[in-house]
Image 1 (tube, rainbow, N blue to C red):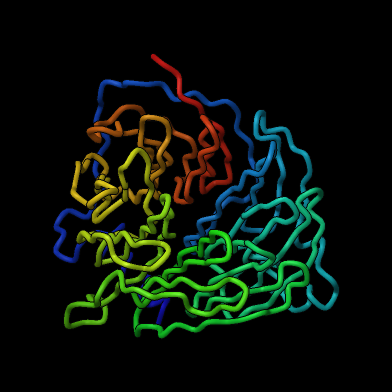
Image 2: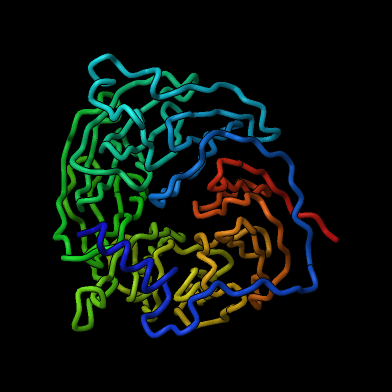
Amino acid sequence: MKHVAALLAVLLLGACASTDEIDIEPKELEDFSAKVKIKEVWSRDIGAGQDDRYTRLVPAVYGSSIYAVDIEGEVVAMDKSNGDVQWRVSLVDQLSEDEASWWSSEVPVAVSAGVTANAERLLIGTYKGEVIALNRADGAELWRARLSSEVLAEPVESMGVVVALTNDGKLYGIDAQTGAEKWMFESVQPVLTLRGTSAPIVKGDVVYAGFDNGKVYAFEIDTGLIQWEQRVAIPKGKTELERIVDIDGTPLLAGEILLAVSFQGRLVAFSSATGRPLWAEDASSVQGPAADYGQVYISGESDKVQAFSLANGVSLWENTDLLRRKLSPPVAWGDYVGVADYEGYLHLLTRDAGQMAARTRVDSDGVRAPMLVDGDTLYVLGSGGELSALKLKPL
């Protein structure tokens, strides 16, 4: 049923469009007076890129390196300053004979999530329901943990525990050294959901996760015990399609505030310590929020880019220049808010007023994966497999 919901959502709703939307065509881009220049520092083809199952593979930065993976299991470590390749491995080459026979002959490794990185490991998820841990130094495989369903969002690690959310609504805690399961939490799944999951996020000994039932939970990371749970959205409407309230965008920690947004629901700010709701605003998104300088940004309904006050949720501005262009999650970059679209254009909006400030094309196959900011550099992994490092320059 999850796949049926995804098709219906794409056909009827587009990129978060409402069911009564008349114009379903992407809005044509209009000229504007640029306020800043986007300069490409380097770009690197890292492989096959994304696939047509709406993967959102993201790169990860740790230390002086950036790591990326493609849908076919090519993992690349690069110098983040210039893109020079430090090592490259294939997950297919690391399969044992027994594992190779278990994998599909057409796509031996179909990567569906990743990468996350820490001092020791890289973590990657697959359509086969695996979490794969690699040695960060050379890409050698450390272990594979086979779970109950597809891993569509990047696993995370803290306090010696790897946490992964599967497409059937289960959250797993896995021993980071061995890959052995420590605990599992199973949520109640709605009849229909969108295809996709949010990634869990961790802070110390607490893991936060959003589920397809419109709820967000905080767990003790070592045991999986629930610390608190809160509802982001309440299903409404007569049909199952109208009642979809998935949290498919990864929640965000902004200091002591946890932000989460659901499809056809709300954007809510919670106390990360207690789960107490601080404020809530009607909103709809399948992408996670971004925040900076006391503001929260979402790629909202019909691909409106919206800004809210972090303190109280008051709407500050919205930009409708990019309607129905299938936007990526927003990212805060310097004095600007960045989103990328299905044609591979990166758009920058001014933080204070949401006005168009700059535009460049980074991958003609489009961009849907979350973009990554490290210092003054923005990293964008296009759907065609092009990884670009960008900086801002004055005109």
